[in-house]
Length: 425
Image 1 (tube, rainbow, N blue to C red):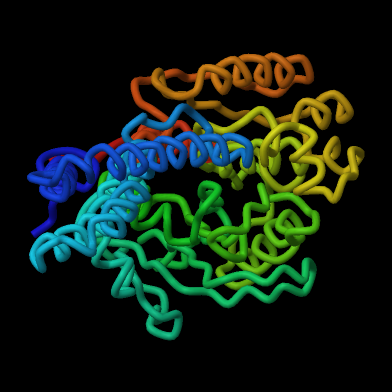
Image 2: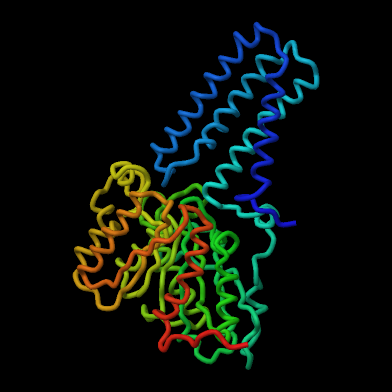
C-alpha cells in the first residue's frame, strides 16, 4: 500500500500517537514531581527547540522558515528524555515503558514534520525503495541494453554508470543515465537532447528519479512523442549525503570539475551523444538550481540551456563570509569565480544561452528577489532569461511539478526542429 508521507492521514496519525504518549507520561503524577521536574523538562525542551533553530540558521541549512512544529518536536525529544529519567524511580513498569517509548515517538514525529517540509520522501513506497535499495524505475544493467531496434520500446532505461574521476579526483557515489526509447533505435543518437539533473543540498544521485519523478515524466513525454525524450544524466555532485559542495571546486572536493570534466565527456563518448551545447541543458532544484545556472553561465561552450528551480543567488553555505570560508577555504577570488552575477558581468555578451528561473509563490522571498536580479543581470549580456512563478513551496513536490511543466520548453530549446506534438489516439 502506497500512502503519502507529506499529506493526508499518516503524518497526522504519527504526531497524534507521539502526543498521546507524552500526555500519558504526564498523567496522574504527584504534586512534587509536577512542581520540581516537569518545569525542568519544559525548560530543557524549550532551550533545545531554540538552540536547534539557531544552529540550523547559523549553518545555512534553512532556505526558508521551517514549520514551528519541527522545533517543537525537537524540544519534545529532550523533554521526554528528562521526564523518563526524573520519573523513573517511582513509576510503575508500564509508565516506564511509555516514558521510554515517548522519546523515539517524538523523534519520529519531528522527522515526519521535517519530511513534510522538504518533501524528500513523498510516500511509503518511496521510503521502502530507499531503505531496501530496490531497483529504480526502468533500471537495467548496461550489458542488458542490447543492439539497435527498429521500433522504440515503450519505456526508456535507467543505467548505472561508472564515471572515472580522472579530471577532478572527486570521490563520488553511484551515478545514472536515463536513455529514452528513441536512443534504442540508434538512428541519430547525436541529435538527442541531454539534461543534467542536479539535486539539493543533502542528496544522492537517485533523488530526481525516486522523489522528483523525472524518469516517469520522461517516459510519459516519450509515449506522446514517438519515443523522443531527453537523455537524463543523474550525477553525484556531493560525494556523501552531508557534504554540501554547491557544485564548486574547493576544500569539499572539485565537484565542478567532476561535472564538466568527468561526467559530461563520459556520457558523450559512452552513449554516442553530441557535445554541442545546443543539445545540452542543466536543470536542478534548490542547490541544484544554483548549480544549473552556474554551469550554464560559466560553461556556455558546454551547456546552452538552464532551468534553475528554487536556487539561490550564488553558492550558499551560510552567510557570504561563511560560504567563502566553508566552500573556498577563505579565498574570495575563488568565490567570485562561481558567483553567477560576477561571472555574467565578466563574461560579456553570450551568443545562444537561455534559461528559466522557477520560483514557488510560498518559497523564500529572498530567492524570488534574487531570481529577478539574476535574470536582469543575464539579459544585460544577451542571455534570454525569464522568471516563472507558480504555486508551491521550497520542496521536492514543487520541483517535480515544475520539471514536468518545463519539459516541453526544454525540448523546444534542445531539439531542431522541435519534436512533434502528442500523437492522436
